[in-house]
Length: 262
Image 1 (tube, rainbow, N blue to C red):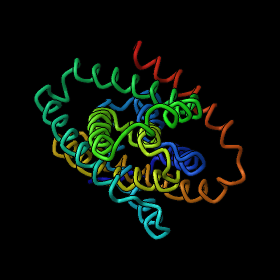
Image 2 (image 1 turned 180 degrees about the vertical axis):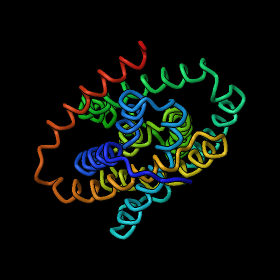
Image 3 (image 1 turned 135 degrees about the vertical axis):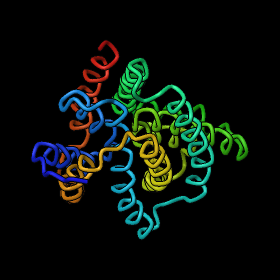
């Protein structure tokens, strides 16, 4: 493997890492479209590389949340029970379709666009969605129903992540808040991040096996993103998160629309 330092890629990693640290939004919703639209990487390569990138970065976040007692492992296990098999099945489908096939690339791009629009909607309408969920959904479910729906949410997230690397952040947290309205937000976020580690690792290794991971690209992204996440997390309390999330949602809508119409 020949590694060449590419400042533009590391700078992109720094910017995405900074935004992730500031807003908590998953890096896949930002990094994958940047790699496809700005740098011209094939959609499958962008997704596969970003999945291993996410597995590494989220491992650090999971460890921090575990140290602070922020992870509800019951929820993490339920999500993984749905997401890991769904991601594995999605990888089998991708292998059958052929990652080099033009129609497969178009399909990945289209699904990525839809996932970005869903993420943007969860950012823009989060408070209204959560208020609706607390009033009509979470209160009326028993323990068994909640467990089954959590597994189902995991399966949906796992499918999206394997195809696009998007879904394990804002979408997962929003869905879990619906299902567990009385659980502290920090524990929901912690459970979602912990769940994302095995999901992105399994999906990333699957893409590696299929040949859609660019290791030099991965290293360039990590060189920028790791300090970016640390810096963003440090200043998160001093930045108007609501305004930043709205701006980010607007960008995701534009990018998602472009990918769908491309």
